[in-house]
Image 1 (cartoon, helix red, strand yellow):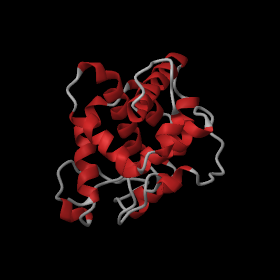
Image 2 (spheres, helix red, strand yellow):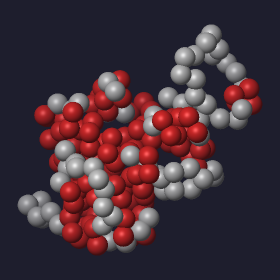
Image 3 (cartoon, helix red, strand yellow):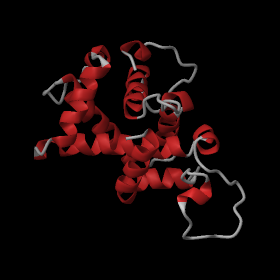
Amino acid sequence: MKRRALIKYISLATGGTIAAPLLASLLSGCQAESLTTTDDYAPQFFSNKEFAVIRNLVDIILPKTDSPSGSEVGVHRTIDKMLFKTYKTEDQLNYKNGFYALMRFLSKTADEAELDIEAVIRLKDQQKKALLSELNIATDKELKTVKEALQHLKQQSIAYYLSTKEIATNYLNYLPVPGQYEPCIALKDTGGKAWAL
C-alpha cells in the first residue's frame, strides 16, 4: 500500500475520534541514532529526553518514504508547542499521564512509580515497532490508557503532518484561496492528489 493511501485511510478511520484538545489546537493555529541527534528546538512541554522519544515515535508512525518523515517537517515540534500553548492544564496532565503509561509499556516497567525513559531510548526502532504492533492488537482492558495515548499520538502526528506547508504544497493539492465549492469531483480531476487540510 502506498504511503498516501495509508495516510488517507488512517485519517478517515481516526478523524471522528480526534480528542477535543487536538481539535482545538488545529482550529487555533529510523534509527536509534536519531534519538541522540541534536535539535535546535528547545522543548517547552516535554523534557529533552521525552522530546527525543516523541521525535523517534513520530518517525516510526510517519517514516521517510517518497515524502519526508514526520520529524523532517517538524511534527514533533508542533506536538510540543500545541501541548504547551493550547492545552488546558487538566488536558496537559492527562496527556502526560498517557505518555508515561506508553513509556512504561515500551520499557516493560510495571511499577507506576518508576519510569525509565533511558530504557525506551535504548530500544532499537524494530523493537519499538514490534511493541507498538503488539499494543495495537492487544485486547487487555488494563492497557486502555496506553492504547489511548498511542492513538492520540498517531492522530496528532497525522493531522500535523498533513497540515504542514511542505506536505500541503508539495504532496497534496493546495489552494490557498479556494474558488467555487464542488462537493463531488473525481480524484482524476484534482491531478490524482487528495486536497490539503
